[in-house]
Length: 343
Image 1 (cartoon, rainbow, N blue to C red):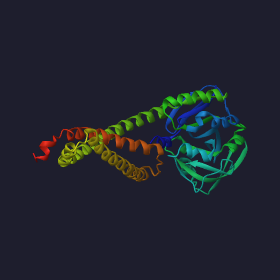
Image 2 (spheres, rainbow, N blue to C red):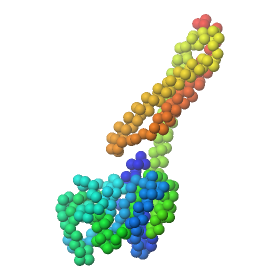
Image 3 (cartoon, helix red, strand yellow):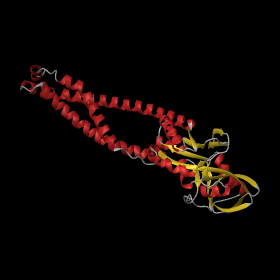
Image 4 (cartoon, rainbow, N blue to C red):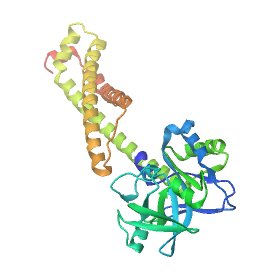
């Protein structure tokens, strides 16, 4: 579930020190920074070598500018195309293929831009800045429901050429699969490593994700406890019935000198087999059902961890043993003489 929530945008933002830039993500506004400044693109390679990289879903730099298209001002955004949707997979991109991040001839335009200028995928148009003209081919149309619909996306290299900001970016959006507390540590690590930037946690996204996952965790915990309790009652009822049906056998074994410990061991051995078989079958049925539901709802597969198999089987055996304590105790209270007389 946390992985799916990561699809709704970045949760860490790298901003240049002492900048003057309005930044945002979709309809969210993260405020402004004073002064003009940039982040060195060469510093970004360090992001993938940090300890936090194991939790990194993806990241993409942004370089902003303004160009003229048919005598109208349009916001130009330089990005890495292959990372843009990875960081924001919920965005709807109408494109026949993933554009290479070094492609300087293609562009992805926002849906509002496409509508304003009557452009479709495959069309070409010109944009200009400071007397220089660039011809671009529309490789995709982006729809986000936010400010991105009014923007013109090109490769970062081309944006740097158009704006004259070689090897520089304005911001970097990063997506990490960790909670709010860990994100603070990630931000501190990024700020220490990249001298030209400050890392900020996008609290709206982080808090919303943490709150939602907390509620989901509470619900699943309550459901799990309820299922385990129902399972324990079912096992207890079954073993109580078995003990009642075997009163004569238990009485005969006690009369022949069998110890209470041996009789209890026989019951617990049967319980152990029930727990192992139930845990084994239940695990694979559960994984199969969960996979089908997940594919149906989120259109993505689940990959269960091997450790969960042993946890599930262990819990199943534990529930069976705990549920069998009362029936076994009742079974050992059988009086051989009374039972053998048929009373």
